[in-house]
Amino acid sequence: MVDAADPDLTFHGDRELGAGLVDLAVNVRLSEPPQWLAEELKAAIAGLGAYPDDREATAALADFHGVPPEMVLPTAGGAEAFTLIARAGLGRRPCVVHPQFTEPEAALVTAGLRPERLVLTEGSGFRLDASQVPPGVDLVLVGNPTNPTGVLHNVSELWDLWREGRTIVVDEAFMDAVPGEIESMIGSRMPDALVLRSLTKTWGLAGLRVGYVVGDPGLIARLRQQQPPWSVSTLALAAIRAVCSERGRDEAGAAANAYSVPRDRLETGLGRLGLAPAGPSYAPFVLAKGPVGLREALRDRGYAVRRGDTFPGLGPEWIRIAVRGVDVVDAFLGAAADALAQLPTGSGTHHPVDPGPGTHS
Image (cartoon, rainbow, N blue to C red; front, side, top):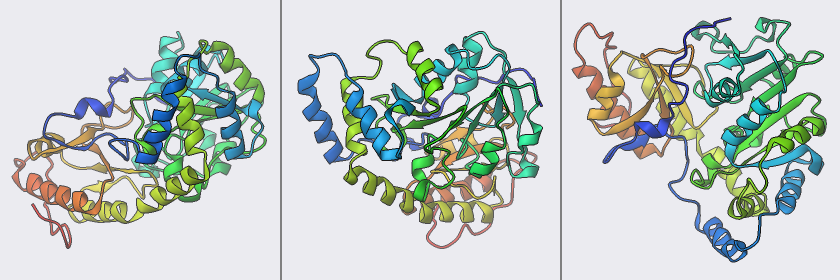
C-alpha cells in the first residue's frame, strides 16, 4: 500500500499531441465516427429543441446487456461517472488500484476524500491480488482491462474484492475492445458493484462525451440523485441507441477482433528492440519499458506516445503506445529503432535489434 505524493493526476494523453505528430498517445480508434453513426447523429439534430430524455437510451443499454433498466445510468462520459461516484458518498475509506486511469482518484480527491493506493508491480505482471486490499476499505476502484497496463483481470478476481459493506467499482472503458467482452463484471445481479463504460474509444466520440454505468440498482439510484438534470445530451443519447443496435454490436465485435494482429506485431517488435512490454495486452494499447528520453526522441521523429510517469506506480521509463494499423506499427517500430540507436550512452539505452519484417526507419 502506497500513500505517496501525487504525480499530475490531471494529465491525459491528448496533451501529448502536436502539429504533424502521428497520434499514438490517445486511445480513440477513429478520428471521427463511422458514416452510418454520423448520419444517426445528424438525424437527431432535429430534436435539439426539446430537453433530453434518457429513457429510450437506458432501455437500449439494458437490453444490450441483459439487465433491467434500473441497473443502468447513461452519463456524460466516464469522467462524469467518476464524479458522481465520488459525490455519492459510496465509501469513506476508498482504495484505488494503480497503475490505472487517474481520473477516479482525482475525482475522489476533489470530493474531499483521501484515497489509499494499492500499487500493482511489474514483478507481478501488474496482476490484482484481492488479499492486498486492507479489510477496512469500503470502496475499491480498479480498471479492467486496465489503462495503461492492458492487463485483463479475471472476473472471479474482481469479485474476490467483495466484502460486506464494500462497494466495487470497475472501469471497463476498454472492455468493448476485448473480443466477446470476456471477464466483464456486468451481469443480472451485481450486489455492491458498479461497472463504468465509455463509447468514446471504439466509436470516435471523444468530443460528444458519452458513457454509462451498470450495476446495483440501489447504487445506480444514488448516482442518479447526484447527476444534474439533462446531463446527457440528446446527441449522446442518440449515439447510445445507435451503437446498441445489431449493426453497432456487429461493428464493435469486428473492431475488437481487428486489434489482435497489429497489437501482436507491436508487442513482438517492441520485444525485439529490447523495449519490454508490460505483458500481454488485451486493450487497444501497449505499455512498454525503455530508456528515459525515448518518448522525447520519438517525438522528434514524428510520434506522440503517452508518458508513463503520471500514472502512480510508473516512472519515466514507461510509455504507452496506442495500437494502430500494421503500416503505422511498422513505421513506428522503425522510428523506435532509430531513436534507440541515437540515444546517448548512459541513458539506459537498450541496444536495438532488427524490429522484424516489414519495418522501416
